Length: 233
Image 1 (cartoon, helix red, strand yellow):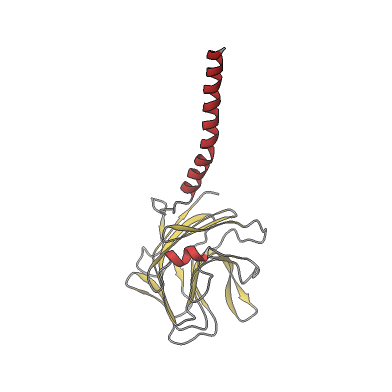
Image 2 (cartoon, one colour):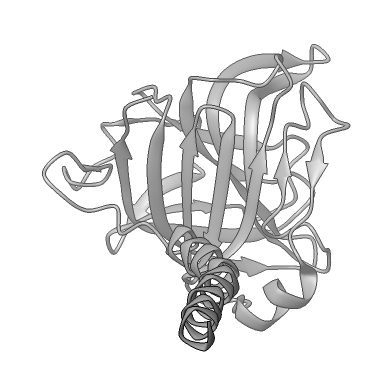
């Protein structure tokens, strides 16, 4: 009986140990899912590979190439924002770039995606689609999700304490995202700041990628190393 009892105790011990290991396994899986996509490989599209803006729809002379970077610059405050869009449309993808924003205390930029341009209140062309707020001076929107021109109530904030630690004002910051179906994920400088599922049927599922130069600011925004990897649904 003692031998059987000892065997049962051993089995029970193994079962308990296995149960205790389950949270660790789940946690490890979450860590792996948080890894920033490399956005590399044969299928990757380099959006500046030609050394020109041929793959982009350029709205005005405010946008140009400078030292291998896309630059949007204003010398005086603009009455309306401007958006530089890709000519190609994307649905599911991984995207990365490096961004630097300088200017006055109203300087503001964002990465828009799954965009179809619309006329906003009959005043200017604006993007219907998602935004990865890339840098908002003196605000807490950096790293957030928005769809302001179509669904202004949609605003999902990143953890400001985390963003403040990793974001480098007036310096280069790597902005990466993975977009697949309703699942939207953002990284800043290798740290995941956003993981959100937008189940609203009004959410855009396909469109162009674009960069914003905000109105009401004297600013310069630069984007470089711009790559996108289309994904299967």
